[in-house]
Length: 169
Image (cartoon, rainbow, N blue to C red; front, side, top):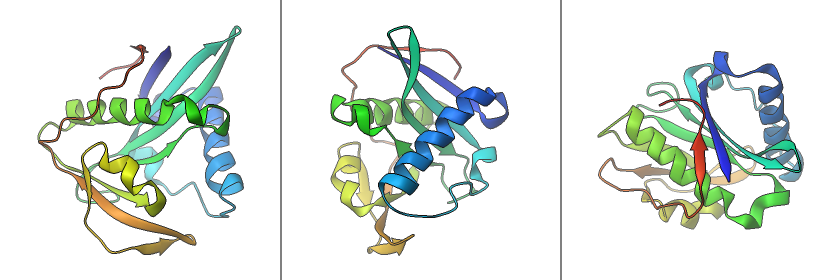
């Protein structure tokens, strides 16, 4: 079961943010061999969705993304920094995370599209959630990316796992 924490940056406990930043660096910098400045300033203007799993008495961060406010990265809100640790990657947490993120997006911004900059290798993954590619391939930090948009009318895929919410909305 995943317990969801959904908070603005200033509401996240220091130890929880440490887990987030460690996961982001582990995957986006170390695993993908891509030295870049992960702290891009957008975290202050975003909702952060953290998915926690209890495992043997320990709480483990198994999923994370942020929903950046409209007007910061794009005119529309933008889901980004979508990440799961390698240790749980084949357990479906990525799909569970995206379904929950889109549910949260729709509650925060009803009737508003979502625009993302996606790694091109994940294009099919995002298409499963109603995103359509709207750009040619471009290189960001040495990795091929595409811009994708999910129109407001699209209903997100349903996650097949139980979850519990700890913060609103």
